[in-house]
Amino acid sequence: MASVKVLGIETSCDETSAAVVEDGVEIISNVVSSQIELHRPYGGVVPELASRNHLQLIDGVVKDALEKAGTSITEMDAIAATYGPGLASSLLIGLNTGKGIAFATGKPFIAINHIEAHLYSPVMTAVDALPMVSLIVSGGHTILVHATGMGRHEILGQTVDDAAGEAFDKVAKLLGLGYPGGPEIDNRAKQGHADAINFPRSMLDNASYNFSFSGLKTSVLYYLRKNPQPNIADVCASFQEAVVDILVGKAIRAALDTGVKTVSASGGVSINSRFRDKLAAECDRRGRRLLLVPPPLCTDNAAMIAALAFFKLQQGRGSDFALEVAPSIGLGVAA
Ligand code: KG4
Ligand code: ZN
Image (cartoon, rainbow, N blue to C red; front, side):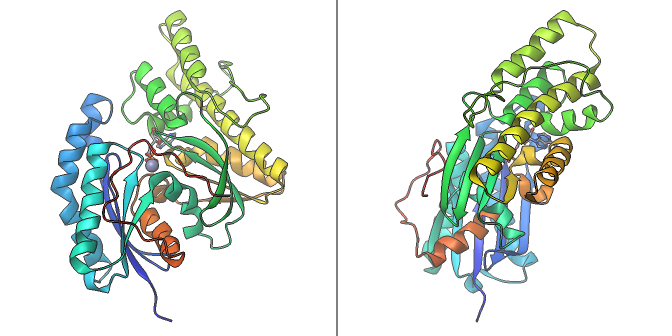
C-alpha cells in the first residue's frame, strides 16, 4: 500500500517549522528555525517580533522541508497546520500558509491542536505507546493525561497557576541567568547539591493530580532576598529537584492508580536531564515502561503536527477553510 505523506506546519510561538511525515511515524524531514536568539535580549518572546519573523521565514522553511524530504507539494496527501493554542499573531502565519497551500493544490487541510500534538508525539517513536499516562510539560502547559487511543484521552490534572517551564524561566530570571531558563538551570544544577535548600513540593501530597508552581517560585524569591550571595548551582539544583519531584510523583501515582503500564512525557521541560533520570528510575522501580521522545521532538516542531494529522486524516477529520486561529484553546477531551 502506498504511504501517506503529510506536510505539517507549526508557528504557534517562536519556532518556525515545517515537516514531512509518512504514515504518522516516519519523519522524512523536520526543519525547525528557532527564534531564541531574536528574543533573548528581551528575556522572553515578543509577539510582534515572532510574527514578523514567521512571515519572513515560513515560505523558505516549507520549501526546505520538502527539498530535504526529496519530494514536492504535489506528492503530499494532506496539509496540516497548528491552529492553537499559542500567540494569535504567530498562529495566523502558519495556519494561513497551510490553508493557502491546501486550497491552491486542492488537498485536504487538517488543523491541529498544539497540545494534542505534544501529547501524541511519543507515538512517533513507538507505535504501541497507547494506552499511556503522559505528562505534557512545556513553557505554556503542565497537563497530566490518560490516553487510551489516538484522540481518546482524559485530563487527570493540570497546573492551577504557572506551567513548569514558566517556573524554570522565571526562576532563571530571578537568578540573572539567560533565556530560556530551563536549559540554563539544567546545566548549572549539575554542579550543585539538590538537597542544599528545601524548597516546597506544592500539592505533591494533595489527592488531586493538579500542579502548582507559583509558590515554589516565590520561595526561591524569598530565599534570594535572605541570601543575596547565593550558591547559584545549589539554588538551581534544589529548585529543579522540587519541580522534578512534583512532576514525577504525580505521573507515577497516575500510572499506579489507572493501572496503565506505559508512562511518557513531552514538551520542552521533558528534555530536563534530572527529570529524565528520575522518571526512568521510578518507572523502573514500579515496573512501568518509559517512553521519551528525543529532545528535538520535545520542543516545538512540525513533525508532531504532521504525525497527528495522519491519524486525523484516517479518522476522516478534515478541517474547514473557515476555521480561525484559537489562541486559548485547551486540550480537547474525548475519552
Ligand atoms: O515545548 P516548548 O518548546 O514550547 C512550549 O510549547 O512552551 O517548551 C519550552 C519550555 C521553556 O520554558 C524552556 O525553559 C523549557 O521548555 N525547557 C527546559 C529544558 N529545555 C527547555 N526546562 C527544563 N530543563 C530543560 N533542559
Ligand atoms: Zn509546545
